[in-house]
Image 1: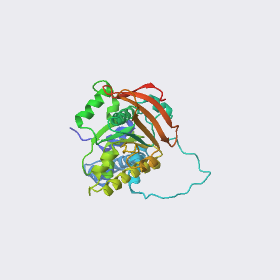
Image 2: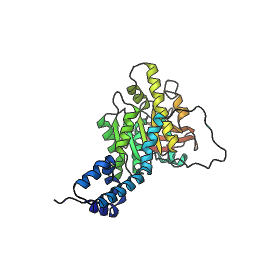
Image 3: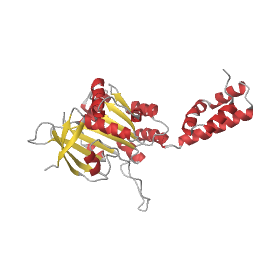
Image 4: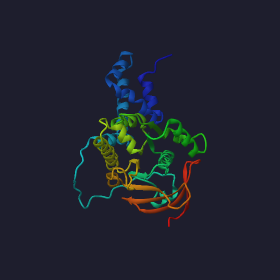
Amino acid sequence: MSRITSAEWLTYLRECDETEAMQIAKAWENNPSQFEAGRLAAGDPPEDVTALAAECRRLREKVRGLTSVSLLAWAEMAQTIPSEPIGDQEPDEPPGVTPPCFRTGVARLDHHVGGGAYGMTVVAAEAKCGKSMFALASAIEAARDGWRVLYLNGELTRSEMSNRVMRYCGGRPRGDWLEQLSIHPVELGITVPHIIGKIRERIEIEDTRLLLVVDSINRVSDMSQMDGSEHGYWHTMREWQEWFRRASKISEGQIASLVVSELNAGGHLKGRSLEYAADLVVRIAPVKDAEPGVFAIDVPYARSSASGAIGDFKLKWRDGCFEFIGDSE
């Protein structure tokens, strides 16, 4: 089989789909001097090698300007930049962009808050109220809408997760959206750098929005902390929530998070600071004196949209979704 020359590679790069061309150019970026030296040693004319290298350089510079590259950079920055207790803003600063929304699978909720959840969204409920189903539905709907979605699963076994995906999709899932969603079982010792590594593996050139789903922040925090103390638990929870919050802020919502949280005995989030860090809080609670499986969904806090009661819903376990049955009294 004959070797492809530098001139032939250059022609192909200029004629093929640009996304493919940018991916091919990664080989040059890994070690440009060795790449070029190998081409010269194989007998390619120096002018052809120079032209090919210039085209690869142009393509890689274009990659660096893409949002997908910025998503990874923002995720890394959110881990390392210091928190500033107070900053400055000029009163005549141009208006910022509206943060993108992701659908939750509860259409009535999405309509109420202006199109879907956004920024750092916290969904809170007691056990067996459908928190994981809400989170999974949101992950699937976001993936269907083109979000890159990483689901951190700290609550369900692999078989339980697979079964719930199939129930929500009405059978074996199909579609291009499957490539947008990846599920990562959480193990002891998980850290923010581990997730940034997964983002680096999964992010594609075409990606412009990233959603991190955490089910649940309590389990992830417990498995993150190494000393086993209560202080260590709250410290790691704060680290995770600050990463989610800063990533959303830096990216103006292009990195969003859906954080599942348990409620304490007083009916508040475990880790009250989650409420203050969030852009949107969704609460699911059993309806008093109603039949089993009926829950009220409300938005006790929303930074950039309407808040208030959404309505009463029947949790349809077989279908993995909430069905609206009436307005809350």
